[in-house]
Picture 1: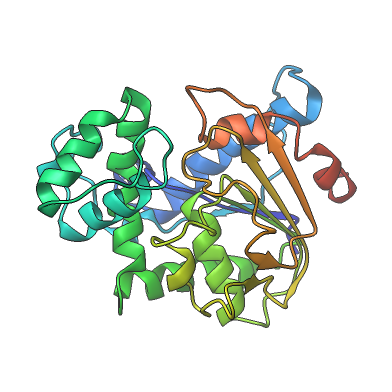
Picture 2: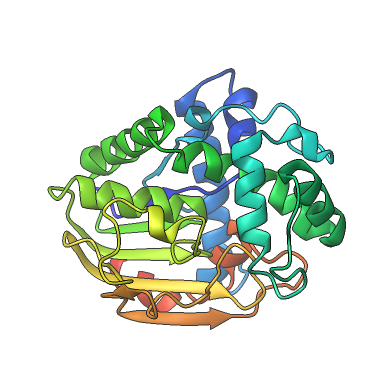
Length: 277
């Protein structure tokens, strides 16, 4: 039985490519980084000596399709589904507002122009992958959930840490597979509550405007940075029943969403230490 399984977020296809199209290689490379990041948070920055904290990373990025140019600046690099996600997501940002009308491609291009550099770069990764996963009848969605379920079932972890879009995949996976018992679910920078993009389209669908903690999960802890534009809203208790504890952290106003910052910030320490020898 493993202790911790991680589920990654957006922009991780490159690990698959760099590992020679190997899921195992990609997952191993990511686990090495997660261990190093967690070590920073758990020890306050003591030198890392290859300590192991994470049993395995559930890797699914290859199932969402390759972003051939992950830093492409042209809105034309997004398909219509990704442009719709961009418009719906950006309409919730205070810096952009909701007054967006006109042809989809023109509006999406205008939004990218209004966003500051880091937010625009984030959008170019976030929107296509969310669109690929959330599309109605998406094979990528079913296959991503199956990949995450297989890793959890094989390792039987006590803790699952899910970052970014990985929190959405994990939420749906745990609901779809009630045999997957998890003592503690930690979501980091989660977009689960994002209206018009994710929340209303979850499976199972929210009832009367509220989602619910998967019944196979013992405790749910949600951690979000105050400036994380993926975590809209940063708190999930307003739209989900069963979130046991929430923490709003201040990571970095520029580097607001990376798993490195979340795992290394120390906010997970009190929750994880009971599970670590």
